[in-house]
Amino acid sequence: MTTQNNTAANFASISAIGSEERRIAARAQTLRFGIEIETFSRTNRGIRQTVANAIASVVGGTVTSAGSYYDKWIATAPDGRKWTVMTDGSVSGFSAEIVSPILTDRDMSTLQDIVRAVRRAGATVDSTCGIHVHVDATESGLADPNAVCRLAKYVYSKEELILACVNQNAGRYANGQGYGSKRIPETLVSTVLSRKYATKHAFLAAFYGWATACGRNRCSTVEASISHSNHYCDARYMTLNLHAYGTKGTVEFRIFDATLHAGKVRAAVELARGLCARAIETKSARATKRPFVASTAKYDIRAMLLKLGMVGDRYDNVRKHFMGEFAAQSSREAGLRTHRGGGASRRANIVVGSRGNVANFDASGAWTPAASR
Image (cartoon, rainbow, N blue to C red):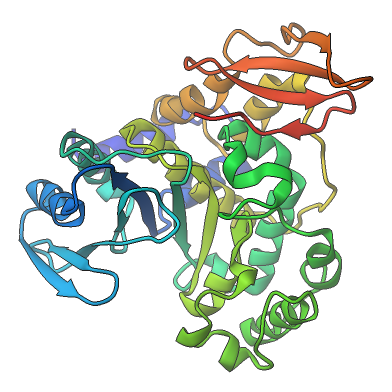
């Protein structure tokens, strides 16, 4: 079936939902994106070249070494787009971080084939690895900084649900202080995101001003803040990286555990684009933090995906991998089991996913990430 026919079928499948949700689903499919997948090998010192060759086996073209401190290997496709494989100091063993070129909706199947090829080549992932999804903010509605504010406020309000939905592991989000990322601070919402901005520069000035005041940025101007020398600005380590809006012209989602399951990689991209599309197509977003409620988790995730227009055959994959984390649960039958431990503390456990991971919720309903994967 042609891409055009596929698109028509997808639009037909969502005809039963509201017009706003249809606009969101349609917009999401137009958004360009990029992805970073952190992988490693325990034994193969040449894993970066191996992974680059695996990518080239899918896209064609050539593989070359770019050298440098990061030992970069480049797989250049016949259309000129470059896939980079490089070291990552935060990852176990012999690391191989995959950095994609700019991708579009029609590249989704190619991305999935690359993930499968990389897994077959011997790369693997563990709790030190993550996936970062970038969504273009230069040629879409996200060029408007107020849309970025709406996105960040929506993610903030749904943050606990989203983190549980993607089954984020404890190593990266324990108490919001994991190496990979931290939750969006309330001070960012109240002092920066709740305002209106006439220009992108005005928004960045407010954002970096907040970051400097919080000790997350060492630069005094926007120009210095977005310079290459400030690439590892601490303000980037959030669920939603807004530092990338200034440095790369993207918004970066840092919420996903790494995986070499092609369907889960696709689901991550679809969720990131859906959240961005909602920010573009709606004119307001509440920044009221909502706690995770175990007894209504499956219903709440279903409702969130519905508001993103994720119904029909196209999004079967997304619903499977995100709602599947709460398989056998329902809004009325959460299957909670309570027990006592650690003195007077009480905790409820809910078993999620086919791997039997356990996400924990304390007596107040606060979420503790799943243990080791």
